[in-house]
Every structure is written in C-alpha cells, then in structure tokens.
Image (cartoon, rainbow, N blue to C red; front, top):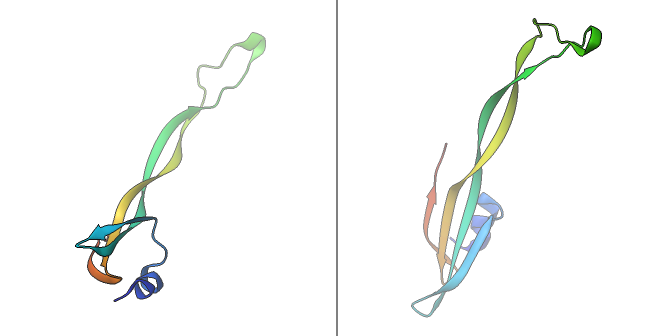
Length: 91
C-alpha cells in the first residue's frame, strides 16, 4: 500500500517524521485520538440578603466539565514509499 492509499483510508496524519533507513526514504505517520474525561465541579448559588449576609441554605450543584485528553491512536511506517508496518489502537 502506498501513501496515497493510507491518506484516503485514514486521512491526514497529525505528525509526520522523515528520515532514512538502509539508504531508503523512511516516514512515520502518527494519528492522534481523544478520550473524553468528565469532571464535576461543585458550585454554589449565593443569595444576597440584608446587609450583605448570605443565607445559610444557599443552594449547591455540580457542574460537568469535559476535558479532551489526546493519545496516540495509530501509526503507519513507510519505507521507500510503501507501508512496512502499522498499529491502530481502537478505544
């Protein structure tokens, strides 16, 4: 399989490393995926009363926040413009 076929199948790589092995052109394409991690942060409603005092029964709630954590999802290696190895981590 050549680079054009990999590009059509997997799309553009997030990182491309170029070099040479045994006097032949070498490339390694890395693809990045993202895991979603949820965090629930406590927040509180503050009700202002007379003379800036707060009521002791202020309501609280948890607010969800999503974080996207990158990971190396796949890698393709090319030697002399042909695929010599690949790895894909399905999650």
